[in-house]
Length: 337
Image (tube, rainbow, N blue to C red; front, side, top):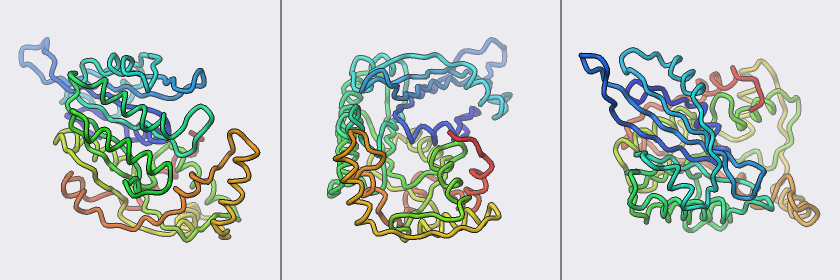
């Protein structure tokens, strides 16, 4: 993602969507040492990952990039970002910690979220508590805009606990004193993220068993999410918007299409979602931290088939990356994230 000559890595943001994190971005000019006053940009980003030292502890990686806009190549920008990291431990539900982390920044990209609850992290403390702390921390500060990445289906009318919690969290930010854009996205695929790794892994299997493989997905490329975030921040856009990929298809067809691009063939056997709910309910009774929960399955049992061209036009990010181009990009990355 090009931000006035600086590259914001789409892989970084894509991976971040699947974990606890927030990005704080500071854009501004710095005085030049040269006589022709070349424009410089500062980008300040904090990425928080939950660490096992406590139920609400996050690791904030903070790095600053100062670049000459007309001289720095994108590849060099990415390398410099990764080579200049500071580490800060913070509590994502702590108003004071977030206040310190956001000091001097102009834009916040809030990506905190979970799909599966654990004994240490519930939907309420991951989604709602973090947003409540963030709204309080940013009051009277320098942050002018928040971009909150949510999930398609996170509506006030949702009956699923995860989706309902994400909806409540988004409303908290929308009602705060800081301008906020809530961006609801579907499955996000990008180089090096877990969803892409899992898709490739399934495509390489000769046989897959899936609960309701007829459910519709509308994958969105991570780079397009980055472009949407950047556009929303620059415009200081307010409100809630859905943004999905350009092509809806069933989960079965997505796996088969990926397999075909890898030169493989796979068979997908469908299992009734009711069976999955019964089994996951049993696992919840047997284990304190089961591998899958009913709420998690309910989120995955959905149908994404919508037209969000109005959001694309508003953000001026058309055209989106096509599904085939998206798959080509992610299939070039084989490492487990």
